[in-house]
Image (cartoon, rainbow, N blue to C red):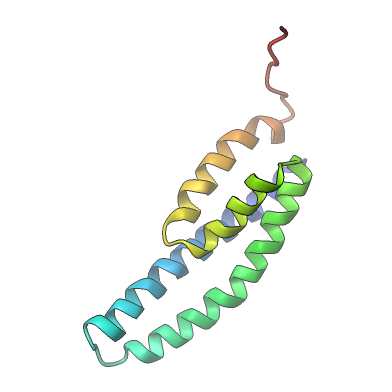
Length: 112
């Protein structure tokens, strides 16, 4: 697996995560605090997050396919872009797991 596959996933995970946190704050400002301008903010950020989430899905699916993940893990990574802050934690876990593979060093396998 190429390093670029992991890098583009990581970038989109952060972008998606930041936009989702901003969207959440915007929704709180709009409906909870009734702040002027929050409606336009949530519209713009919501549209941006929606389109970039699609890009995140493509990159995450590509990464999962190349890493040969089981379906459950793949679904968790794909859904991480819909839960505020989850994308940051999932990205870190995935990156730690795959960095050795990307560097060309296969992890040592214990033989029974």
